[in-house]
Length: 404
Image (tube, rainbow, N blue to C red; front, side, top):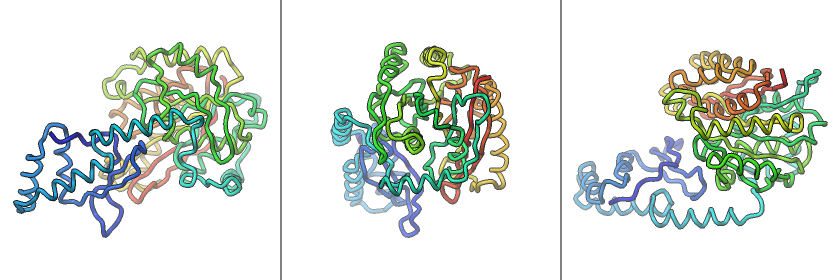
């Protein structure tokens, strides 16, 4: 039988005019390869499902090419996919083991997105982020101390208005607090928290990870928490928050980096997320820690909101702020109003509508925070939509939370 094509790959239409087809790449970075499968061969990928044989694939190729000698095409396609690390075969298993072992042995979580999401040179980075935050209004200067902020996790250059709004709510005195960075987990297990003990490194320097809190979560959550070191290695939802925090407070900030897996079972099957025992443990344990530590913690939610357009499986050509995206903004704002009210149940009711057809990838961290810190009340500081490509839009917001 032909090996399975990995289900964790990215598949997007080729943006290169003279090279049409389907682009395949590995968001897990087990492979740095990028393949463009030409249009006539895209259907052939369906044969890499662990159930079809090489003979099945060859017969299909003969049908579509009319060439009885289609074996060469079959062999080239199989070799290209396997060499790239895109098949569930021995080559990929070996590659994966080597990459995960290398990260497990590394003392630091090295910056994965410097040089792409933000500058890798410290001087250039400071200049760039000074520009990003320039002109920020002083938010959250009232009597209620900032309990949490919600910021995007899109690349900073795409969501800078929302990033600026969120981080303007922080003050110099916040430097002594532990930043609980609750980020969207794009690669980890659903209904789980993903933990790591590694300090995060950026061009600014190394953070301090609160090992005591990591150990407590691992001990109390049991199967609801996983040491997902490699998910942290490639994830951006926490890394971008670290860079902004270091820019404001220096490299040696104290953090608790936590990846929050999606609550897909609740979205698609109904019921509350905490109907799942793992989620019930998560919100309960985080709630106990939040109550005990009180003002010592500052929560940072790394969350994007709607994902609309062709990149995300929609037929519409999405343009920020126009046509269908104007309606999306109104629906986003309804959810944001529930966040402002601290209404976890009301927020989740709206996420569940149409099985979250807005595709909010930050819904699980938001719900987790609202349940764990029920006294939180929010304030929308800035809403933004951004065309990530010509036909697709991501929305996000900068928010501040304080105690009721």
